[in-house]
Length: 272
Image 1 (cartoon, rainbow, N blue to C red):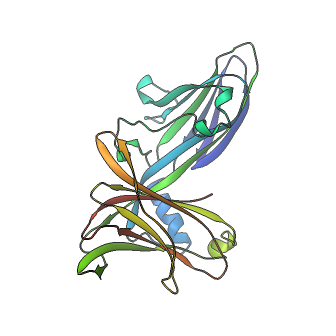
Image 2 (cartoon, rainbow, N blue to C red):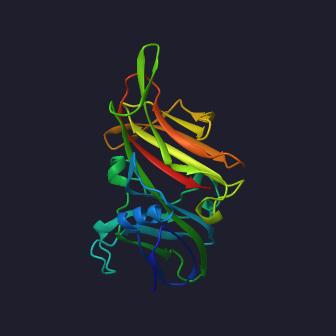
Image 3 (cartoon, helix red, strand yellow):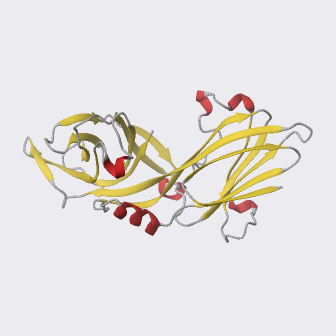
């Protein structure tokens, strides 16, 4: 059995060859203070939204034999894994790898739990374990693990609003996520692609507006939410992606599609 300690991270790649053994990866997700401090380091602070947890994906790009893959929480941070600590476990087949139907071959989402109960915790140690089903043949593998920070916000009647046909439409303008070419010590540049996802309570029919911060001009908009069910709860989901262009400072506004609507929403913002 090979145990690999990755340290504190939100993403890593694993590669190896299994022959009658298990490979186990141990890693710790950053604390909420780590996230806030990193955000403050680049001159920003969370205003209308706050970190609440992590969403994760596990993608295999190489696997030449079936493998049993387990993902779970090391509750006591002691490297000992009990059955009740396993979040997801499945046999991944080589035919699954690279298939669009199996982009996330080990689903970490439990549809019996609510969205918040599915989130991974700040500062917690997790494990990823791979075990070959064929002990006589070498099983080469390559995977990528990524965890995205999920932020929670709320549109309420204390938020800014605009009037349309004598009715109020409330919104959060998230200028803390404003982006332009050269931001973050030139890590952000023209041509970079970004993906935004908003999941909300059913009381809120969300709309994502992508705006030019300098002119307030609408660059793009995402609406017509799709409905998803997790646990006993139903949620609305809208998504938008964009490519950074020169001479534009992009910002976000999360709004209600219907007048007088309020509710909680969950935001993820990631580079592609």
